[in-house]
Length: 459
Ligand code: ARG
Image (cartoon, rainbow, N blue to C red; front, side, top):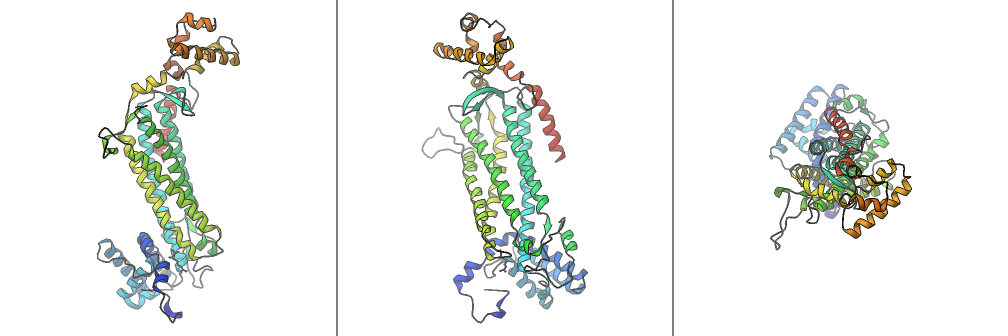
């Protein structure tokens, strides 16, 4: 049990207490950030005349050698230490002696852990943003190739109006684009450096917090030392944004599972992204989509957990805050894994265009357009709605689609119908006439696609 704070104590810590309190099993995840923060700290201490150049050089060399040894597997991070901060400091002292004991001058583990967590989270925010961008690139490829691939659009999971695959994918493009903008907002808002806040009330040393902040790539230092060590808002914001990413992925997965079912057959998931059954030889299951959908709960759980942990904590640092790590790390790894797999799955997924188009042809997806046809010939919309309602009933009785009725049959319902109705209710017309921006008509869609391409080039 290697501890940094034994001086005041006369008894050893109880083993169970030690284990309960220790965080090394999980905070070693930000070992690199801990070393990076310590290097910036000592470089600043030397600039301010708090450490000599020799002391600074010895500490930086010592820290660099510890990092190298851990990276090369020569030095193991073990539970002999309470946390990753103790591990680094103890190893530094054993390597370079007394100079190592000066590393923690003007610093507390409270501002140290606040920094480490922030550095770690900041990098992960950027990594998730990058994965979202890759996903958007694949979504856009599918959009570009399918501006005239017809399919039914649904409300209540009932066929509603015909759309195109490009249009359907475009909805997800917008969702993931918003997810990216949330990442970029979080990055900007969190990018202030807590180091130099000490335990809670700053320090009496003449630290240059602006300098440390700039060394570590922050916009500047945080402006209240109490808040600096007690703030985990950025973790909450990140987990909230990750939960929204998972909610989007999960909805997409749900659709893919439905589309991949034997009843729909709109898509076929590639063999590389499907699994079989141990008993039923015919099966090819959409396990990846199901797992992504399932893992959404884990990420929501992490958000609820940290929100609950933080809600009753008085200022400033309290040990409760150590609970910010495990579930957050798990959530980040989960989302990154899900994004990577999901992107691969849709990149390789095959769309059965004929089946989609055939499905768009039945289910009366052109009923609104049939009503619009009558409206364009002077029938008030409410009357047109009622006439087409009767037409649909008749079609159901005759087991025919609207476009399969003869002009005589149509005229029995309303003599406003003329032979040009067949063109007006064709799948192609139904889609192509939807021309306002945001609608599925290929001309409108191509304009949106150009904007999406522009966006991906810029950001
Ligand atoms: N392991 C602690 C955490 O994760 C580090 C900070 C410890 N500070 C303290 N005063 N005990 O929050």
